[in-house]
Image 1: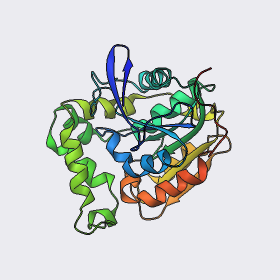
Image 2: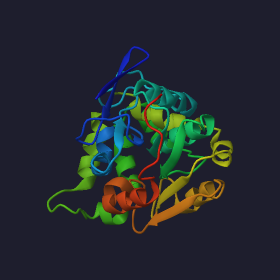
Image 3: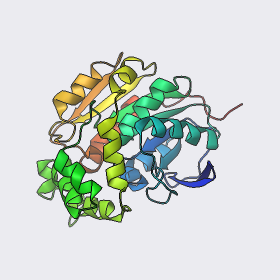
Image 4: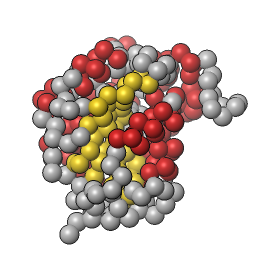
Length: 272
């Protein structure tokens, strides 16, 4: 599905079913250097179980026109523009990594537009290692290698995958390699300089879930729990053995956490 936002084409996957703005809506927001494909299992489930699903490609990512948006605050505003373009009064937001900060900021800024929030791999501050940031700035392949090494848990690095013969780290590498020059740096720098996380967490009004990887090296469990502790009434799920990319490493556990949290009915859908 394509949306027009500010005269630019924005792509959103719909989980294999035509998007219906009259159903309870969920917007999925990917992490740094990624695109909508990271949500393939979760989006398909919700699309076929009574929800309108949009897994978006952020500006400059995947099939969405650029340039990338350089700040978390700008991404938050853009997410609300996505709701407007899709004719949605409200939606649940699900974000991973940089996407989690963008959805966190959006939910705090626009409480009347966000009726539920799920944060995956979210910790504030989300500072980026200098070596990784410098490599991403230089478009050095080392940045992709470091993301893969630090992003996946030990079990994933040993080749664990539900589908025999499939290595998730190789898929992760190909996804990062498909990103345009400076896209990864743009996303990581936005996380690195973002200053509003504590205030946003404390000001959330909607039900919020934080999904954390037990062995996450990029947003460590202790840091993620520290951020979650600031959120009123937060629900926490820790996925055992998972690293930062839990939606790929533990897709079923991630889906279960989302399925048990996101409202099944009674959400406001299309604008009236």
